[in-house]
Image (cartoon, rainbow, N blue to C red; front, side):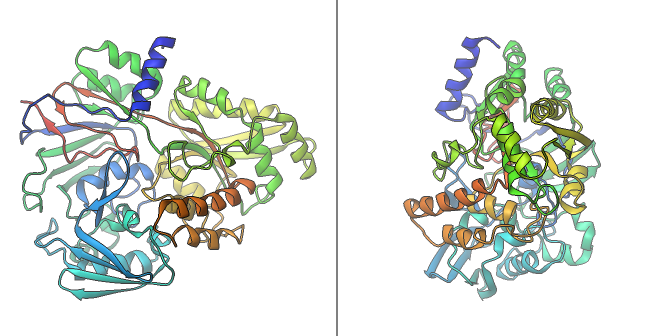
Length: 508
């Protein structure tokens, strides 16, 4: 990519997301969108799944109680038409009438209570931390649910735009049990047809969807193609219509193809190293700090992202309202300081660490860059590779490995990010402990205010605790880059970096 291409690409990203479409063309119904998906889902049940990359599949089958604006992540009506806080410890949801699940059962207040209680109580739920402040759920009308809270929680609307707000059919969950992981029943625009593991996921139109104007597409077919280079070639060849999660290095290929359209936009997607800080040597803050100082993030960005991503030292990008610019300066590249910290921790001759990583080419390239940077301070790396579901389970459930080279895909409300990664008992906290006691109260404080200035101040306090204790190793924020054929219209990326197709239609 030339410097001119690079500047043009960054200018597009700075201006916001691009959108594909045809001027003055009216959307038409019909057709099946064929998507190249770079990963297999962990499950297709929003409560039991664990991969952030699952959302692209879940969004087709599950509507959430609250929706979000693509560009700003501001909450807007979803399955719930409205919500309110009559007092700081009470949250009321008012549902749309006439919503039915794919099995023709009603998505009413009883169904919502079932789902929220399941999230809070089911041993298989990976979403418990999202609703940790909910003390009880009551049906207060046929289409009204009232949540009583143990602490004020102004993050709930956006939390309910994520997994916690995706409603499953109670009838199906009760009848299928664990099989609901692979045979999901939601109330989204499309309903589940089939899932051939690591090959294809198929959904078809939900004819009784609550919005009569949508969906436009008759269905969506996801072909699981782990290597995005192969996925891009499948779109160029006309075998698929759209591919997402492209690397910056692939944009020139897209631009040279007359039949392809590139779509770009900023995201919360952070490539990072997760730390199991509940085991040696990662339970020593000096080791964690040394790892952060050992990484040249600018060089990592150039080597793995063609310099087209944002180097990261926090879990929120510069564009986010809760980003703390001062805390972002915490870990400049300083190998000498990293070596000293290792020596102070009792490792003057370096140490051995084990890193879990994906087996695809891009992940392996990132690992190679980190291995070389770690070598300079005496950290010796061994690694084990596999698919996203395999590695996510191995690191977070089986506690295998010291570090996990993966990504945090972002959440609508920033308190979710910190709660899910660092809260006691959270799935994405491999140690399952709250290694820093101050995190719990600081998290609650971020949810105790409704105005942005007060929340921003609370988040600065939380980011200071996380950063000084080096509980994670952020590397870069990845920009969205997708490509599709000319016949795909009105596809838009969103700030979460997780594709949705509710407005997409196909030209005849």
